[in-house]
Amino acid sequence: MNDTASIVAALDASKATRVWFTTDFWSLSKPTRAKEAKLGYNVVDAIKQRSNQVKHVVYNSGAGADAAPTKMQEFWSKVDVERYMEKELGPLKITWSVLRPVAFLENLDDQKNGNPLKKGKIKMLTKPNIAVEYISCKDIGKGSAELLMHPELYAGQKIDAATCEHTGPELADILSEVSGTTCTYSMSVPRVILYLFVRQLYYLVTWIEQGGYDETDIDAFKKVVPDCQDAKAWFSAKGKWADGEKFVSKSIE
Image 1 (cartoon, helix red, strand yellow):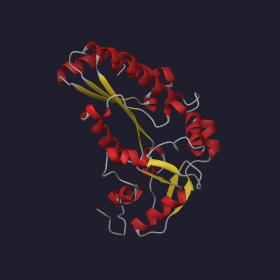
Image 2 (cartoon, helix red, strand yellow):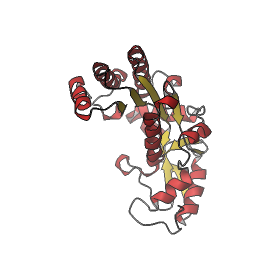
Image 3 (tube, rainbow, N blue to C red):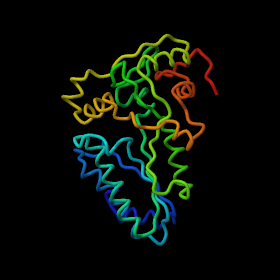
Image 4 (cartoon, one colour):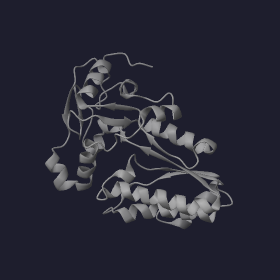
């Protein structure tokens, strides 16, 4: 995505008439708002070069991105891409849609980033009493597919994507029921550690705690993906702890 010509070549090889893409702030070396936005600009610029071929584009952004403080660079970089896409593709009669997910349920079992789902415990970055909106990556995929396959319904729309909302203890209660093991909730990283070593993540977590995702409409997204997973369904589908030990209770279908 750093090379527009490479993206054009992919469009030529695939003969795609519809394109889905996203950008990843955290994948960049020394990430900045401008660096991430440039990745999105490159995709849009490639699509412009094949405007006789591509008819509809879907971009995955972030819920509440344009309501976040400007210091949250990984949100505003996505707003920059949204705005560029709208501005550049509109005159070419190429339609677009944006999906804006909230926090991932997969963050609750994220061994790569130091938060595996250990037996009897569930951890997240937010304080216990804070209700956080969540969605599974599977449902992000389903929502993206709906927007991609039905431009007649979603062209020009920016849709927030969330399927459930829970505090930490609520998640622990749900996991206890599903796993057959009494579970407790705790914060995964001390707040001071986030502030000192992962400042952008600190800004994100404190913004969520201040109601950053509160405007998301869960019922609206359920109309896009009626069979979406709530937390109970997600834990049930997982069916095991991070070390591979299976839950005692039978998973729901």
